[in-house]
Image (tube, rainbow, N blue to C red; front, side, top):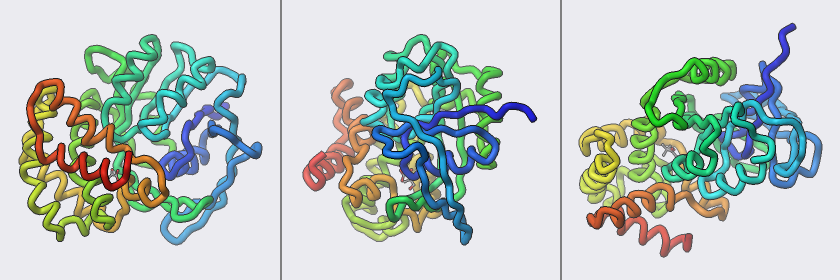
Length: 305
Ligand code: KPL
């Protein structure tokens, strides 16, 4: 029997646990947790009507175990730099680091912090949530795109293809792309145009469409997002953003967005890496993006983060 590939997973939230459960069927998956209390991390994984008990080995971030070969990072954007710096002693230039973070900013920081490492980003529309501690629900089938972000010039290397094949062993749909930045910026626009509304209005994704706040904001907000993204040399029209947002709202109508999940769990939100990142672009270029600025202000006032 060929030896199974070892995959380390940092961050065992809903999405990390989904990938861990799926990848562990044909790989050796090890979870890296902040303060593991046991040798294994156990949870129930619910897919459609089927419940499976998952039990995976775990290590603490500060463990001095072997070097890591493949690392999937699912920590919140605001935790990622610290979490990776705690395991830096286990990373070598041949380690493959795959970032699954929402929003923008964390990827650029990590490329600068780890200039000699292979860093990949994944953009995923898979949906998972954790209604109670120890239970993970696979909420909606999506797809995942993977690309190398450590190279100046985008290219689809043989290593990206190998990693795509490895992630596909989860049976989730995974594709490689050399245009991963395009996908990350589009995902950022979608998150900026959906997540804060769901948090402010305390409702499911699909329900924001009935609220005046969303109806009056979406067209000017899409224009602002398009301008901000074009300032970063990515072509994405306001019309394309709005159409995509409507499509995602339709597909994920019953989902509780990641931002509303954070609010309900009393956790900080990733607003600084979404609408906050757009505000940083506005500040750098001294261009006002008033609809985005107002959303950001309301989020900061209402949730104090
Ligand atoms: O990515 C998402 C999130 O919740 O963060 C969306 C696309 C809004 C789906 O819920």
